[in-house]
Image (cartoon, rainbow, N blue to C red; front, side):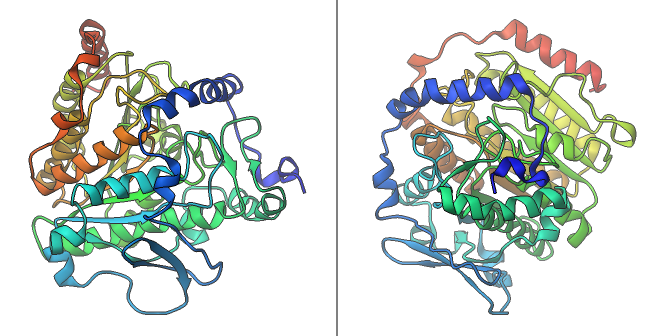
Length: 449
């Protein structure tokens, strides 16, 4: 059955922006390839691959010298790390590379997470080199359909599962009309794995926070990404809203009523935005490039009904960089979080604002992302007992993505940044400081900051 005949997958698609995104993808793939010095073949050989057995609901990652395999099990043992492991760790992460979810020459490719893992290993930021300071969560449950349905329409979830049959027959299908979001035969299960990794990290951080004042900061190195996925369907490379699902999980399972979500991806997280428009207990704050895909995230999008004021969108002009983002953090993010008084902070960590990224035109650097990671960790420590989980979103230059995530790990550890070894100041140009200041002043006025 063609996917277009599955009524469950009927979704809203902004007609002009989907076409625009496909144009960008086609015309910038070569630029993207030229930026990337890690080859896809290198990433997929000698590092992480996932063997998926489509039964049971537990993901068990097994480290060997050259690979990590992930299989599903029906064993009933506790999936959380021990209290001692959690108390010793300063960083905890989980990997869900979704290697079966892949389209040739597509920016959101299966090479992304392995590139990060290789960089972490190269820079000695893994348990092998750091012992108990860094903990990889290797045993976690898949997200359940009920978990996904806390954010997405059940009709969409069931429709995507049914679509795996035609995907298996055709090899690959588009699940967003003519848009850029695709699916393979493994997409449904691998999306459950990705969401499940995020939930397990929330569980681990919350458990650790009950026994220590400074729990580990967590990072879900997962794909497909999630912040564009709207309640009724997929969008913009995204299948399920990983951060949104984790926010509902934190509320429902752990009683953490007030969730603060920071989205610093270069594109507006419209899916997360839409999921919580009328919810006063989930504050969604997005910084993104003005005019970029999907064209949402205007200043006046502040939430509706009871949720009015609990959504803050700050579109930044093209060319904005480190100076702009430091000012945004100090003048917008911090006062918003302080006023909201969150119980946990979740982060949609998109690294596509990097100056080397092919799909946008901001001027963030690896140093910018170090600053964000360090400051957000401190903000969580100050406001909500250190409870903080990062979720990988965008980032399509494999070098800038992997170096920036690695430097985020250093920030979590309280170690100095090594951004100077990667960043090249010579390629930067003057930021549009007047327009940045105007944007910041406008959003501060709207939200009385």
